[in-house]
Length: 385
Image (tube, rainbow, N blue to C red; front, side, top):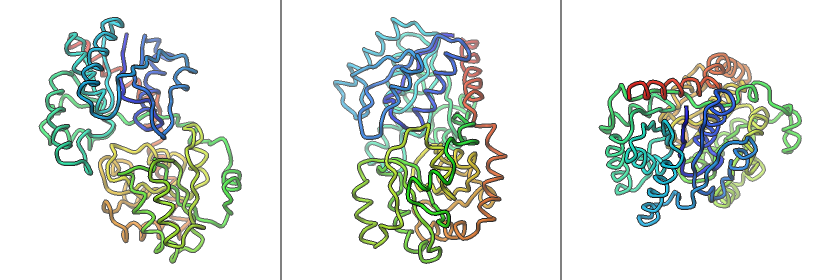
C-alpha cells in the first residue's frame, strides 16, 4: 500500500502525534510505502520534524503550506500538492487538519486518487468568528465530495459533521487516537523524582493540566477556580505543562490572585516525557472549550490518574462521570472548583477512578491497534474503487 499523508504543521500536538504514529507504523510494522507532506512547523509549540527524520520516515516539507488563510499562497500550495502527488503516485491519500484537509482533498480529487480525511477536531467550532465558522462549514460540505471516507477520533466529531449536513453515517469510522501505551503504564522516572525536580513535596496534591497556553485551552477557568480549591485543600498545587502566547497573561493573573506559590509552570515538555509528568500528578484537569478528544484524557487514565473535564466534544467518551472522573459544564468555574476539590480531598476516590480508567482504556489506545484499523479503512476504500 502506497500512502501519502498530508497535515498542515507537524508541531507538538495531539493530531500531529497521532499522524506520526500512523505513518511510522505503516512504514516499520506493515512495510507500506508512505510519505508525510507537511508545512513548516512554525510557532512556539515545538516541532516533531526531528522525530520523523530520526525514525527514517519520508518527510516532505512544503513551504507554501501555512495555517493562516492566504488566498494567493493557498493557491500556490494547492498546485504544489498536486505536483507532489503526481510524482509520488500514492494508492490513497490521508489528509489531516483544516487547511491540509481542504487543499489535500481537492488535489487528490483532481488527480482521481482515493482520499480519506481524518477529523481530529472540527474545523468549525466554538470560539470562531461567525464569518470563519460558516466559511469552514461551507468548505467542509464542498470537500465532502472530494473524499471517500472520514476517520474521526471520537463519535462526537462524526455527529457534529453529520448535524452540519456533511457526509452520511456510513461514511464515518471512529478510531481512537493511538499512543505509546506502555510509556504511560510504566513512566521512566518515579513519582518522587518528578516531584523533587519540580520542588513538590509528597504531601502536595498535584492538579495537572497539559495543554498549549493558547486561546480555547481554558487555562483561565482553572486559574479563576483556584482560590476556591486552595481554600478547600490548602496542600493543593497546580502543575501546568506547556507553553504558548498566554503564558505571561496567566502568570500575571495568578499573581493578582496571590496564588503564585501554588502554581508551577513546567514549560514545553518533549512528548516522550509527558507520561513522567502525569505520573507526578494526583489528578488531571481538562478545561478546553473545543477539542476533538484530548489525548491527555486517556493518557491520564492509562497512568492511573482520575480526570476532571469540561463536558465537550469527545470528552464524555473517556471521562465517564463518577467512574473515571467528573464531567462539569463547559466554561464553568464554581462547578469546576467543586469537582477538583472533591477529588483532591479524597485519595481513595482518586485511586478508584484511576484504576477503572486504566483497566477500561489502556488496550483501546495502543497506536498499533489504531494503525491496523486505519489500514482496514484504506482497504475498504480501495476495494470499493
